[in-house]
Length: 126
Image 1 (cartoon, rainbow, N blue to C red):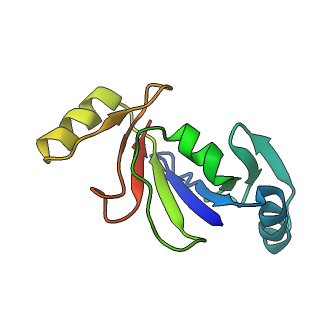
Image 2: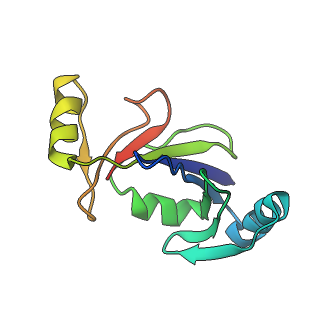
């Protein structure tokens, strides 16, 4: 079981988050591919790839991080979420609501749109 979640930011740093049954082994493969070492974040290993870092987590850690957010229901591995940095979370949430979507507030102050509302991939704005 592998999930991937990708994050973007206005600073052109585009982290990609992948969930895997064995995040350490999966991160080792990505680290070897990019000739770098993996570091650690709360969800699991992070492989720095320049403008698009790859973070990995187990399905349970990803579900905890995105509590209340619909994740994709596809065979794994797959992209589970895009993380998008915004300057104004409240303004972004208001824009999403105006678009007819239903954002979910997350514990860290960010908000997310479920995969069922966002082209099959959850979108997290923080």
